[in-house]
Amino acid sequence: MKNLVRAALLLLVAPAALAQGQLNLYCSSPNTAWCQGMANGFEKLTGTKVAVLQKATGEMLAQIKAEKDNPKGDVWWAGPGDAYLQAAEEGLLETYRSPNVASLHDWARRITDISKDRVSGVYGGIIALGYNTEIVAKKKLPVPRCWKDLTNPVYKGEIMFGNPNSSGTAYLMLASLVQVFGEEEAFRYMKDVHPNVNAYARSGIGPMAAVTRGETAIGSTVLHGVINEIVRGFPVHPVLPCEGVGYEVGSTAIIKGTRNLDAARKFVDFALSLDGQKLGLEVKEFAIPTHRDVPLPPQVPKLTDVKVISYDFAKYGSSTERKRLLDRWEKEINAAAR
Image (cartoon, rainbow, N blue to C red):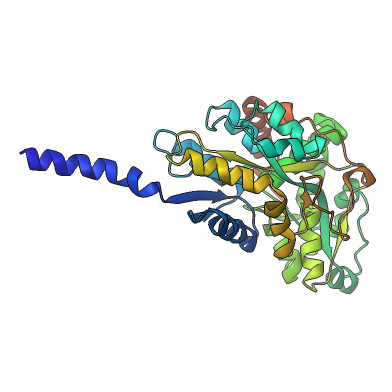
């Protein structure tokens, strides 16, 4: 009997013991090479093995919620900060202010302050549209310059957006439109565009991937998502809508209840460091670095050179506001016939 009890206790302890030598990284970047590059860079620096799980931001938030009583992940990295702020509000993240936060741009440090030291900014991304130049030319479609241009019936079936219930980038676009136009006008606008939308993709990369493959003419994305494809030689071009755009602070955080707190803190330090932030460019990821001393890629405009709104991270990252907007979008937009 004693042997059975001892064996049972060993089974309970074993997962925690095994976890000490491995960091479980939850990655919400759509760029697999970037996720793995961060894992490899940290592994090389510290000797700690890193296992990577990759999912869209909204889906990862749902998984972290589901696992809150028995966390499987240690660190969440990449994806728009709004979802991270919701996770922080719901008690799903550990408190940690890396000393490297002091080296970040002011716009990146804001998210750490708003989250009360639970979230750190690792890159910036500007909401944009991307279009396939060959399809637009072949179908003689006008090139959109503004959000309102997309309501033109000529674009029927030619536009793909993301689903904000699963995609952090799509939620960022939704919240940005509400701030650009005001909520009622924004929802009227989305209803007017809806007949032209062929699908709401589950992931933020979905629309731009479809544009790149020639499956749709126009897609919602972030600016670096378009630049990434231009650099790879695809016939795509970005649009920064004339009315104004929001921006994301791609983030990282330590998952509450991690069994590897020391390694998780070291990963956050690494993600905010000069060397950690340079890894994006090495895998041809053209997001805006948050570290002041990492040079901006020549293909990427400064935030100050773009008509960006003063995005209210505190409001639109709150659990209550996020849920309210997503519920309204689901009922009034996604459920509507096209």
